[in-house]
Image 1 (cartoon, rainbow, N blue to C red):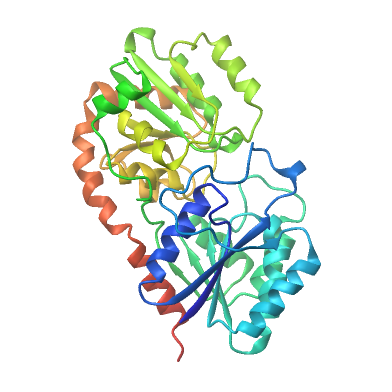
Image 2: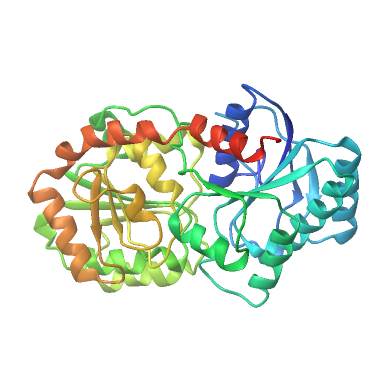
Length: 374
């Protein structure tokens, strides 16, 4: 097939750009694929981070052409007409936020009007974690002009069918991120990061309210200082950073919580994951989490809350522990048990086995099955 992927992609940054790089590499083994990304992904006043572009190039091919403008309807029409002329067999959109529904939907409508091109949506979210006016309207607009869907968790499957009953879709689990290299010795990673504590927990990724960092901080406060746990909070804040730092100070956690308030370049990611005993996902809501799939790449168990699709990936008592959401006492008890029962080494072999089923090949197979012409 000839395939055009439209999404966040390198030189833009973040987990979705990493996902697209890995998906495109897998698709190119059997198909002719081009990638188009944004020249303006968000208006500056709506973007909560520091920069929208990647700082390095490790793990990426050449930068994708930057052609889409998320807020310019004339651009949407231009890109849609271009794709109608080019007649790719398939267009793939990576969809995670209704903000992009009008842009993607208009491009899809024009491109598939040639009677040949079909549209597939890889659904990170159908109904977002943080609801805003217009979310359902914008999403329905895109769904109207889409032919097929990939869902990666049961919660997203339910959301898709609630808005588009009878949709043509397949379930394909979120693959493991292997773009960040391989695991390094924990002693080496901890030395590089200046860690001396015997126990290290990692909270990683963009920090938004629904990810429950405040719950984790309350849970850590419930553990005694003698527990010797150092928690690293690593990622750029898309929420008010000051309130979390105030919480750390108020709870007296300054020597037990290290905040690295920045986007981590690809070549540094493995240090944090290799240094940790577990990744913690104290989410208040979720569909799936790419962070769990980074953890699995580094053979790292996960402590997560029972929301969305997290319990589908983190197998309780096998590859990690599942606990109640928005409950600092339950989370503190779970963390204590993880360490006191020596579960890290018990679970790591299961993680190594479990991650083998989260392959990009499986995702490509699902796309091919969905789009095979009769």
